[in-house]
Image (cartoon, rainbow, N blue to C red; front, side, top):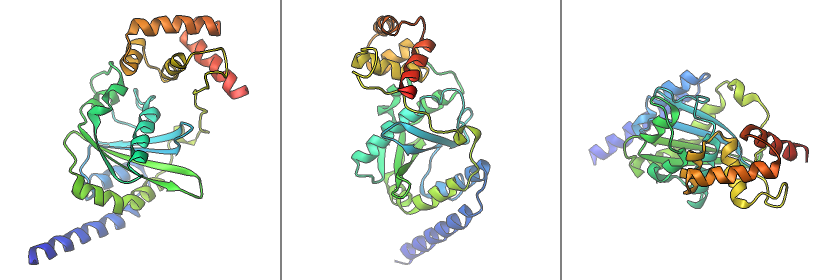
Length: 262
């Protein structure tokens, strides 16, 4: 009983230090040091992914906090992160918007095949498990999602309880950090279009164009959609014909032009 009381008292002191420390955060480096401190006692992790905005529309901003090389908020390879965060959001919603543990290997196919050593995608491939939780801002009608990723298995407890208790503190800490230039721009409209909206693109062609807009190669798109790169190439040729364009950049630009001006 004495040992149990000591553990509870020690945890209480940890929580108090966390709350006090969060009030002084103003920069990304402050947030990093805070997350690498007492937070690790309750929620050990290598990468924190944060996403906020309208997940239904795909209008999402993101932030990344980690000590790992190449794992930065807008490093090369992060273009597809909003889509990945969208998949994490779907998993969280299916869990009743409660803390949700996951095996990251079930999401690895979304990264495609290519990843340079030391890159963001390469670091993600080394992750084994994750923990998702978030908050919904009823006044602002947006949601904030937080994903802890680790190369080791994250134990459901005490991590799930801790993230539930600390979520308002984590959310407040991130809101105090000065925005990066990329986060100050208006939300981009998503590329997603209905099948009957423009150009007669099929559902599969629309899927492929979503990934093209995120910079994925034919082989990466094939891996994600479980089809061959050659099949993707054939789809792209038909898309070019329907859009009357000659390359991928022109295709994305033409569809965006219709969505933004339509």
